[in-house]
Image (cartoon, rainbow, N blue to C red):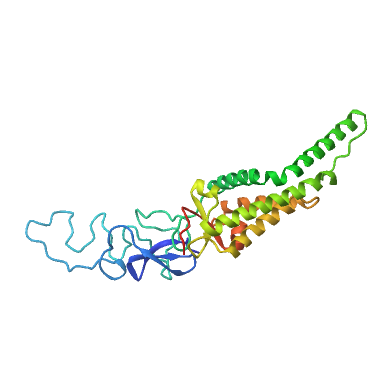
Length: 289
């Protein structure tokens, strides 16, 4: 049985916490929050020798000094905020001490990961910005695309009114695609320049800054490297441009949708393009390395 990843009290140093990656302890450590641990080895309270009570001190139902009292931790039991230890020194799956806070999904060094809706909101805002910026370059193609699409729809209605059976196709005619493909390509090129510029310098596009999230390498703090941004955008851009290609567009469109939805069930909150680049979208600003 695997253990959940997260920050836990270091069994070898109770003044700090250590990150458990789900299979083994990592080298990532941080100061332990909360009250100081009990004295003794591995957080166990030092056992005091039992002393005989003085006359009149011990009453019925009371126990001697050093013995467990109601509500107090038994010798060797986990402390407040300290998880039960598993067979290899890791946290035991499904068990936790009273008051232990749930594990928040985070990077190995403890930065909280962004939720899915913030990512969607940032992508929507960035899409609006890129659409406005790229419109002088793509407007000509979008205009002819709309005209071709309206002409195609008008021909279908004319055929139906004339009494002939219209031929419905799963793909649009080439007169429509020849305008949408260059418009999509130019918009993606503008999007790439936009994202590459902001991510490599600040770790966040204006849309991500607006909702308070940023992009970083999973294991390294700071803005992602140019290579990581290329990998990240490469998958996203390829799925977008192939989604506009006749015949195969539906398949790649579904893959693009899957890429968007993947963080909903991924334990590292990564989309497919994050996995290719080994990046994470985190809460807050990316700190420089």
